[in-house]
Image 1 (spheres, rainbow, N blue to C red):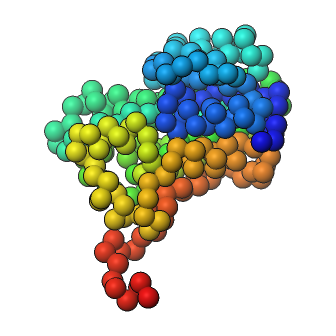
Image 2: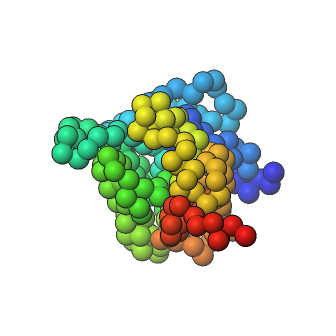
Image 3: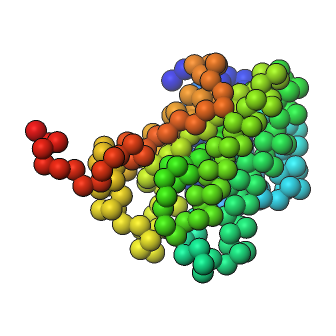
Length: 254
């Protein structure tokens, strides 16, 4: 694999597992030094990854961790805002504290980590911010109001930040995954709030994504191949959000 990010330093929030771990692996393979911000420890230490215990919804935790990255790794070139959790309930039964928790980690975490990283990127002449949105921010999924709202907010903040920091040579984009085999989706499968049969019914490619299939476009957006792309959200969902009908008529399958 090419050393596209040789000499660069990337932060990946939620980097201990799932899509975040896949992004960290991809960046290390392409030459970057990576810092993972997560409250969950990885299963084992990873070469090229500095694992830090960070609450991305807490401003002081983010500030201290960002300073530690600069102190230990020297700079910040790329930020992947990926940390997130899922909680499911009908909106009228949703505990307001749960709403604040979900939105605070997804959208608040993007805000806090971006705000901390931007001054460091400006010092090195530019950088890239790539955030994990979701197809759930585009289509409606019942019972996931805070998650869907936060993911739609990530797409909006991506556009606002992109025009704000463009004069400093910082690009800001997002990926919006569809159903992906991650611990978060497995949690929903285990509690019965999602079923794999239903998910596959809605996906024209007829399978769930693997984490690496989301990591690759995310890393692309951080690299030189995307040097003129900013303010965009790339949907990586196997065709889910463009599915006009979920029950295909027989005449389509000729």
